[in-house]
Image 1 (cartoon, rainbow, N blue to C red):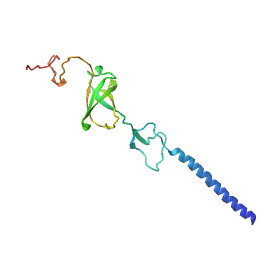
Image 2 (image 1 turned 60 degrees about the vertical axis):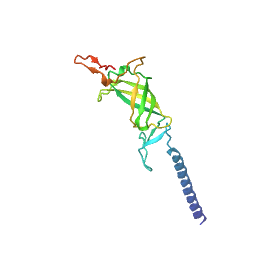
Image 3 (image 1 turned 45 degrees about the vertical axis):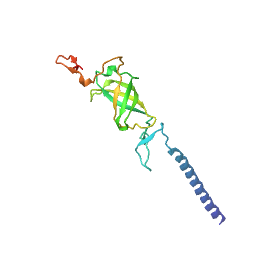
Image 4 (image 1 turned 180 degrees about the vertical axis):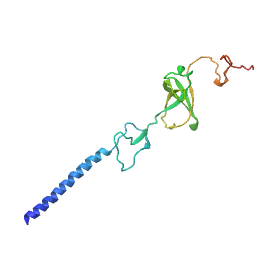
Length: 172
């Protein structure tokens, strides 16, 4: 009778030890479930749901940091040789009724085969977080500095049948 009692007690103790080991393993695994982002920012896209299995190499979230934003523009072949990294640009964002200064960070050396244009990227500081991803802007890009230069819109320049460019000048 004592042997049976000891055997049942040992089985219960063994089951308890097994349950404790399972709990310890589960708590240890739970420690690996916290995901840390490599940058600060906000979650712009969530690609998984609660309870879904995560797989290595699969993006769980997309995180955006908007302390600096980039404006992208395409320029013609005739303009790209005049654009240099570090050049200043004035970015007028109509939706916030404001102009900000930016700096050219990329002037692509290769033409986009689909558009026939060259990509230029302008970095803009955004400390108040007023500029948002996807906003449209008018950009004035400084491609050369000249003192006492006459400035006219490019659509005012006409071209004759020989390729000679000219403008009309109105007196008074």
